[in-house]
Image (cartoon, rainbow, N blue to C red):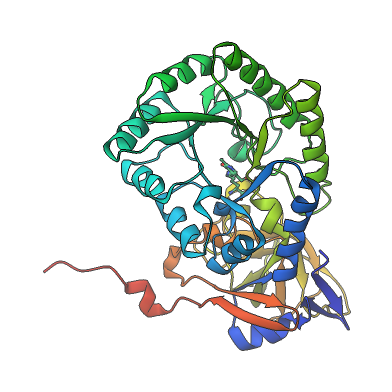
Length: 417
Ligand code: LLP
């Protein structure tokens, strides 16, 4: 991870030693690299070149305002899934004409807010949602731009919880029924059909499922054209994986080049492309710093009990996800196999298992690849204040979210009289 490197046996984020941040700001602490965000964005921007592609950051991966603002400044669009995300995106200066609104359960108030903001497109996932959107838009005297999210029934070969394009998933409209649902959309008064959308899964490390989906979507677009329904853009969702350990995910360039090859080969070169990458823009731009509280040598296992837990980083507990773990100050000496676990009262509260480390009580660890779906999925379980977040920029750093206080934990609640 180029922006998190050792110098003189200390792990740095860009030009800032991580132990310095932990001393100043405490742990658990999320540390992001601005240069890493920019580099990830650049990998998309340079792959796009002059072609008509809108890259909408899938902001559910990390919706810290400083992260959003950085992408907004770089010219990104945003893929939102709630009224709350719309609020955050607009607060960060997002251009509404570059916002697409995804999600299976949009409420009327969320539709109203998004229509008032004039977002680019609603990615609609059911007939019932189409009808509601048309009603809401009609009440406002507006027209809602829509794509249907179709479910192409392809196996993205990723973890079942993050695979979304199979028949069994709750997402999208079965591709066979899509022509009928498009006809319905066309007949409703306040809708304007603009695109076709899909999202087949996340952390994809193989490019072929995208192309299985693409061919099906292009068949659909041709069919719709024959029915007199014009499609302006094709949204292929997000999903490009990142390297957590030894994965070799496809690059944005590999994906985008091949998509345009296929569009041109099929005479559909006029289509605009929308992408919704989340993880691949932020995942390897962050680490979670945590301090070893205790070492516990039990009969069957050695445990390093740290001050970060599943409430800070849920991915291992929820998906058995792998995150690399490194000592910020590696020690010479014998390594021991540890399970790295948090203080939360759940056996699922682990961050990493069976890792060889030479560590002592009080040592600082960096949990890698913690820029995506990490702080974003944090909770207050076990009445734990959520961690602080800091953005490193060269040799400077900025606290971009202060640590929650114990008083924050009591906010908004009241007791009975
Ligand atoms: N667009 C839609 C409609 C999505 O549902 C998602 C992610 C994205 C874009 C962005 O996908 P990405 O490029 O990040 O793969 N919490 C899980 C990942 C859940 C992904 C949900 N949808 C994890 O920690 O692995």
